Length: 303
Image (cartoon, rainbow, N blue to C red; front, side):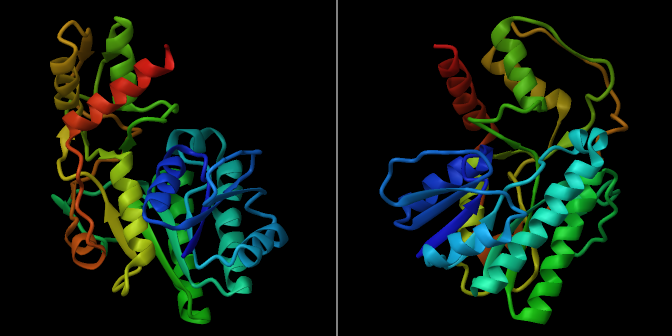
């Protein structure tokens, strides 16, 4: 079995490539930048998502059976400043991946979507059939990718499934994030100040759990719905997250006020029953264990 991973050298992509190799698969790691991987079961290919001839060649020459599409612009905040760049990468790029797969005869694609597809939801429990109302260009691009996948499934007999992933954390995350910012502040001894937002809720998911879910979706014998949730099993507030970090670093200086942050979507707890039923996915990492692994990684970067 051979899987092509777009963004194989990215945050989630690295963990996913490792997991696929552990499961005995051959992997094609497709990246816009030059990359090297000395493992005999991993082939690296440099190319843009938009370059359909390069993608088709990578798929056909390596006899690829399935694709896991992680590449793109991956931050809703960045999309507010760079909407057209995000649209080009996440809509045009995703369309190119789907079309290259269709041309090469690859049917199964696991497409990375996001909790940002929903926007703000008042429901206490979030199900996959709830209507998306994205609030950022990034969220719009994720909804577009999902809808395009449905069209390719209906018109061309593809097997494209989208994973709505919640806030990911763990080793390898360089972009700004709540947990990463809290950990870096605690490690450096600098204060973390958030005037408003302590009541805002997140359902964090450790990066290894995301890689596990993507692998399971790529090999699932039957996909009964076009979208599945991928998340951790606990929803907590920003204040509770800070207290969890403070349990590791008692001297951490956090000043977090109550309330909610307007620029962040407010959502209920994500239901994982369909992901467990159809994919066999259950989150395996607790927040405490995931934070400990994240701390170890951050500290290793400074050594």
